[in-house]
View 1 (cartoon, helix red, strand yellow):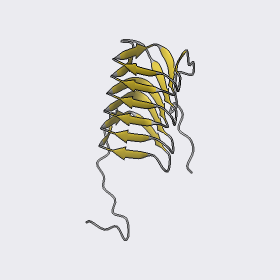
View 2 (cartoon, one colour):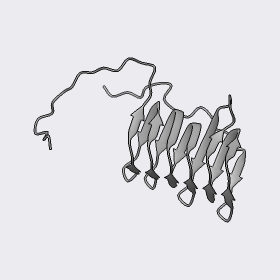
View 3 (cartoon, one colour):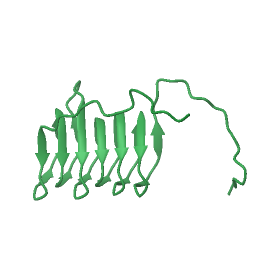
Length: 138
């Protein structure tokens, strides 16, 4: 009844760069392939124009700036807007203060978002509203 949908996963699996836990970067950063962040970045982060990139932000990682990537696995903190063109996974320790735009989202229990979540899809949205028993409008 509830099967997994095909095509709903991270496309990039190669992590070719690392910002280690003892590293702090100030300034904008663009990368290709995959980037793991265990340290801190104060600046905007994106994959290079025309490239698909994977961002893995560990529990110790922190980014203060706007992030635009193809795929992302977040378990650390982002203070800024997050735009993910394909697949976003928010793990239990993820903390995002800012607006999130995504195509596909997996959000684990414990993840925290202070901002809006906006799904950007090529599909036409189904505008049917279903009332659940006991649902309150408050």
